[in-house]
Length: 327
Image 1: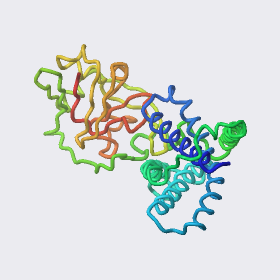
Image 2 (image 1 turned 180 degrees about the vertical axis):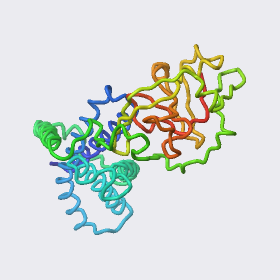
Image 3 (image 1 turned 135 degrees about the horizontal axis):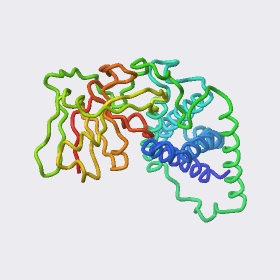
Image 4 (image 1 turned 90 degrees about the vertical axis):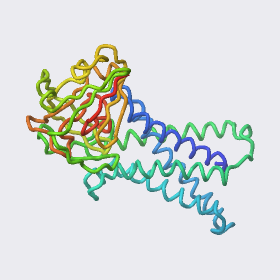
C-alpha cells in the first residue's frame, strides 16, 4: 500500500478512535452503542494498518537514521500508538482490568495514552505531513478494495475478539460487585483529593438567575421527600456496579428556589470544583444521594451528597456536591 495512503488510514483510525471514545462518554448508554462498536473496529483497523506502517518506518529509519526532530516525534508517536492500542486490546481480551496488574485502572492508562497520542499526531502531521502524491492519484480501484478489505477484516476480528475474555458491558466496563453498600471501587477521574467536610458548616447552595442563593443544610435536605432507586454506576475507569441509592430528587431541591419550575439547564458543582451542566430531561431523573445500600455515603463515595444520573457515565455523577446553578 502507498505510504501516503497508509498514513491517511492511520490518521483516520486515530481520529475515529478519539471522536468515538470521547463522544460515547457524554451520551447515555442507549445512544452510544454504535459508537462503542465503531471504537473497537477502528482500534483493530489501527493495529492492522500498523503492519504496513512498520515496513515504511523501518525503511525510513535505515535511510535517514534517527537525526532530526521529526524522526523523534514519529518515534514517540509510535510508542504511544502501541501503548494505547495494546492496552485497548489487552483490556478487550481480559488480560488487564481496572484492578490488575496495577491498582490504577489499565483503561485509564489507555485513555491517557490516547489523548497524548492526539497531541503527538498533530505535531507529527505538521512536521512530516505529505502533499505528494496527490490524493486524486490514490483514489484508485485497488486503493478502494484495500480500504474495504481493511474495514471488513477489522469488523470480523472485532466480532471474534468480543467472544473471548471476561464478561463486560458494551462500554467495556467489568463488574465490580453489586448491592454491597459502600463496598465498591472508589475512582476520582479528575485527581481531586477526598475533601474533609464538616456537616455543621456545609451548605448546599442553590443559585438561581437574578435572585439571591438559597442555602440548605444537611438537615434541610434529609427532611425533603425521600427517593430510592436501583441504578448502575458505569465508571469510565472500566468497572460497573449496581447499587440501591437513596436521597432526594434534584427537581425537589430546585423547587426550593425561584428557578425550580423554569430552569432548563442546571450546573452541578462539587466542593472540589468538578462540575457538569445537565439539561431538563436529565434533571427530571437525577437524584442527590445521601445513602447507598442503606448506608450513609462514605467520604470517598461523595459524602454528604452525590449526584446520581441514571444512564450517564460515572464521571458525571458529581461527588461532594456544594452548588447547584440554575439557568
